[in-house]
Image (cartoon, rainbow, N blue to C red; front, side):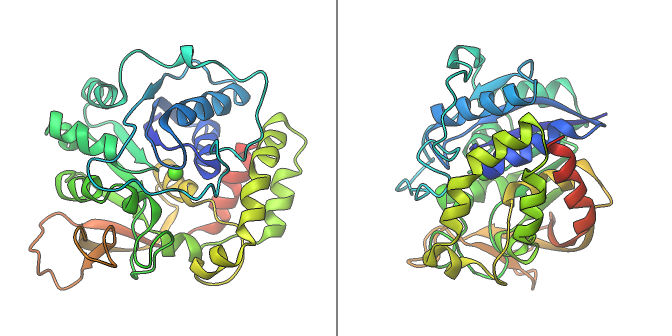
Length: 317
Ligand SMILES: [Ca+2]
């Protein structure tokens, strides 16, 4: 069994990614840690519990993490996933926050990774605040990880919330900088542009959500808002490579689930711009090796889309 620990800011694509991990037959989700991002950290916890409920996975522990970035101005997710992060389609039977663990997310990351040295793949699909604090409290965390998978950053200076920065990195640039510097375990990054170039047709999305299951009905309900928001002109402008369905966070989870899913990648030292007027939060690829980083990240370039589609389809069964 592959052991996954998920760190999320549960918007709709996080929900899709979590459901993919829960449905994978050879994967054990050890816990889900929550961070502010697409919505408040309280909403993130609530959203994760709703996802776990529909997947009958409420035995998986959920931990509340950090409610604001390490430094700087908080940026808004613009309610792309709705004000509550899950398309403003509330559920009267949603589990209460009393199910959230007493232990905090940062402490939980340190404990869980320490309990399973060399075995845990940490999948971070929100702002990296919890991960940055964990490595500051316990610098031995990266060497105890099997691997780190990140959805975030960008490879071609194309942003989605600012001109040059992707949402997760722009939300907490200092945290992203710390994580890319200090986590020297095998690190895989699904950047914004890569997810844009790996879109699925909307027709796939229709077939995916028309499956006659409680999970598909739940996903259809919560994704209506973001699907409508995708037709907005401002959103279209930040998409590279035309229209289509992107489940950003699921690309990182799929990489953690299936080793054969990555077809092409690039090994490169990476860092994050902290002080640029227009570029704060942008991921920088040191293709010339000028930073002299011995640790190189693996930037996803091309993945097996048939495997990806199957993982998505299976996640709604
Ligand atoms: Ca996310």
